[in-house]
Image (cartoon, rainbow, N blue to C red; front, side, top):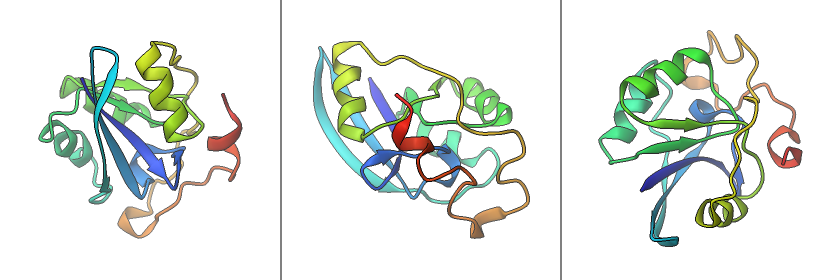
Length: 133
């Protein structure tokens, strides 16, 4: 399975579309086979699901995303797991052990609208993506 994790520094980003990067992880037979970090190419409506699908991603993990994004990922047959926070390494460990549990999206409706590509950070508090476990 190939998984993309919205990444900000060493942690899961609170909003998948505004994250600076994605950590792409290949997991097979309970082991991490490959891990790479790729820059977020930009937040255009509908673009990221296609971008990640073209890289054979089966699942996206993020702190949150809006309903439109959830629908677009579904149309590209990419599973979405939201409500995730903590370090990338913790998330990978939970993935391998089958212990990662989804939660409520950290995004509020309307956050990020109207900002286009110039907005690089979501309007979540700094601790939203670090303290929710």
